[in-house]
Amino acid sequence: MLPRIGVLGVGHFGRFHAVKLAARGCLVALHDASPARAAQVAAELGVPALDAAGVIAASDAVLVTAPTAYHHGLGLAVLRAGRHLFVEKPMAATMEQAEELAAEAAARKLVLQVGHIERYSAALRAVKAAAVGRHPLALEATRVAPFRPRSLDVSVVMDLMVHDLDLVLDLAGSPLVSVQAAGARVVTDKLDFAVAHLGFANGARATVTASRASVALERRLRLLGPQGEMRVDFLARSLEMLAPGGAEGRADMPGWGLDRATWTDHDSLEAEHAAFLASVTTGAPVEANAAVGLRALDVALRVEQAAAG
Image (cartoon, rainbow, N blue to C red; front, top):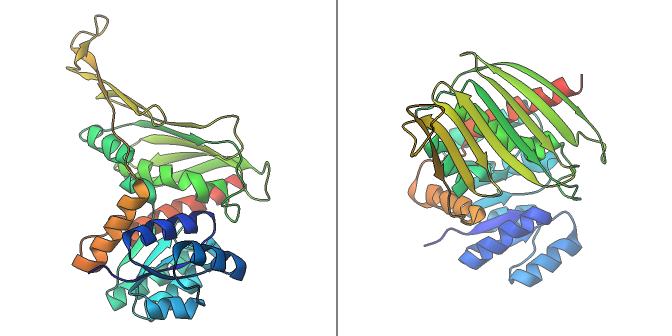
């Protein structure tokens, strides 16, 4: 039997969450700070629009997809009512708020999943599988896009860069020891582009670039280390690795060759929901758990602070 799921916040991305959950047959109610918006989406999906307390009471688990400033207050209300919690990224506005959510969920033995949707994408699974056994000393991640009027309550670091920060922290496989960054406001009153330079205890260095005021869409990853180079173009769904024994031999590098791979995309949002429902109903481990959310938020906040000078 599917759990009853409520959604708090049905703005741009919150509505997508609600649509997917309605299609699964487990959406029971929704709320939005805008009564008109709540009524519109509720009518579209055939569920009631209630106040936040009503949604929580009607649900077994709740998605908090409101703006970041409300994650802490709404998340605590969900957990203190004994409901499982999915909270969009960033987990909260501050580390103190995020830590309180994590502690509350742990104390009550409730599921807390953070909306790091990229962890459930086919692309990231392909990259992490290919990176097994590689020990990169240089990492470069780029995620830029033309301006779109969405997620403007947070900086580009919290909106876009946080995904690649999470990925780079995993791939580096070593504790983070330094953060430097630069960035600027272009269209909004928050950082619209940022470049972060991360240093790790094993000597590895990473450069992570994010922009929401770019000429065109671009999303790439590059790893360099003793095992060779790996290049990923996420838009082209291409992964290339120069490595010892690669399938396509190199005359200029005896013993080395090029391996190529790709992947078939799937609906990452559906995969993310499936993981949350499995954790709620069967106790399956939470991949994007509180620890993941806390680590990503901590580094993102440090990048913001460094970029602010």
